[in-house]
Length: 174
Ligand code: KMT
Ligand code: NI
Image 1 (cartoon, rainbow, N blue to C red):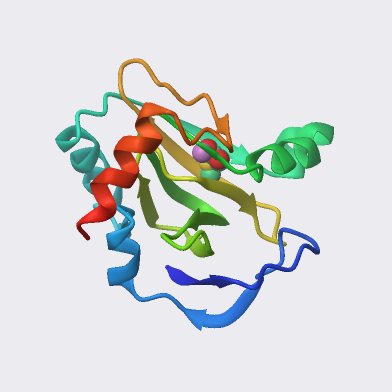
Image 2 (cartoon, rainbow, N blue to C red):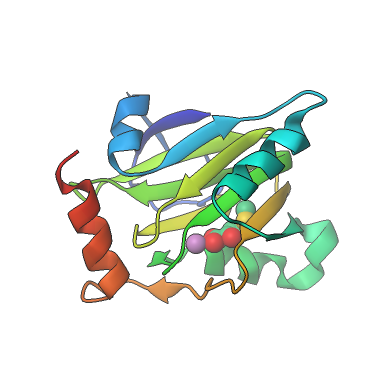
């Protein structure tokens, strides 16, 4: 997983937007973001174990591409890229293809995580983030969720949201 500061230019969201400044793994961990890589024959078992250990019971697989989505693809990709938070963890495992997750750091800078096949990310509840496909326009991702998924995206600003407040509190000591 490659992690770097976004260059903050607004042209095509699917380009790399690599500012050239890498972000170390510790900095990501301080934001409460967890990153793993599971590949090889036991990869799915490893994903299932992790899901089980965090009490995740359900999953689905989504393919985001012009071929699978047809004409709503462009619209969907724009929606995923709107800054938001969730009141629950967001776990994503990349089965095939690639994608970018952008998360806000403590100074409100965009940190871009490039996920390739085998990469798994856990975004904590309350973190502002967004997602986009890359210029390859293809990702097949597993989405893991608990019994009752609360994946409604709450658009920024929602700074008074309890999960936002709790999240900021939780990373304070880091
Ligand atoms: C999200 O919350 O932005 C998504 O689930 C993106 C699609 S999964 C790669
Ligand atoms: Ni999200």
